[in-house]
Amino acid sequence: MGKNRLEAFSDGVLAIIITIMVLELKVPHGDNLGALLALIPIFLSYLLSFIYVGIYWNNHHHMFHTAGTVKGGILWANLHLLFWLSLIPFATGWMGENHFAPAPTALYGLVLLMASMAYWLLQRAIIAAQGDDSLLAYAVGRDVKGKLSPVLYCAAIPLAFVSPWISGTLYILVALMWLIPDRRIERVLMTREERSAL
Image (cartoon, rainbow, N blue to C red; front, side, top):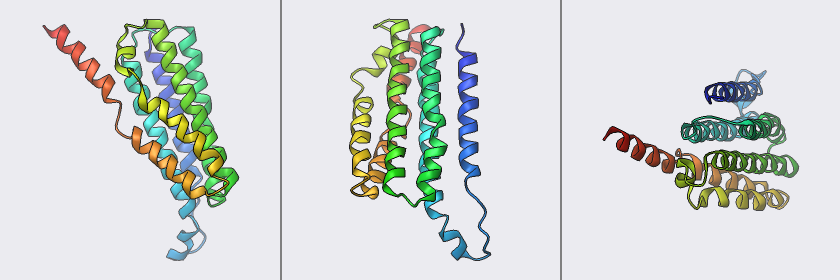
C-alpha cells in the first residue's frame, strides 16, 4: 500500500498527543504571578515533551520520505512506535505534577527509551523492506545518534534515583542531539533528485 495513509494516521496521533499534553496545563486559581510559579515544573515537562514529539514527527516525516510503499511489518512497527509515543502525555503529567520526583522522572526516561527503540525497529523494518542498498540504509549509515540515545536513556533512568536533575539534563542532551532534522536523509534525497534531473 502507499505510505500516505500511514503518514496521515501518524500525524493525527501525534497531533492528539500534543493536544492531550497541553490540556494538562491547568489555569491557576490565583490572579497574581505567584500562582504561576506552581506551574513551572508542569510547563517545563510539557516543553521538553513537546520538543520530543516534534523531533519524532520531523524525523518520521524524513524517514518516510525515503519509502515508496509500506508492508505489514512496517505498519506494525509504526503502530509500536505510536504506542510508546502515546504514553508521553501520561509520563509528562506525572513528572510535572510531582516536580521531577525520582520515580516519575525514571518512568519518563523509560518511555523515551522504549520510543527510541521502537523508532529504530521501524527504521530497520523500512530498510528490510527496501534492501540494504536503499536510500534509508545509505542515509542512516553507522547511526551514531541512534546508538548513543538509548545509552544515555539507560544511564538517565537509574540516575533519576540519585538526582532527577542529572536525568533531566541527559533527556535535554538527547533532545538537542536530535533537534535538527536528520540531514543525512536530506542529503541523500537531494542527491537522488539531482541525479534524476540530469
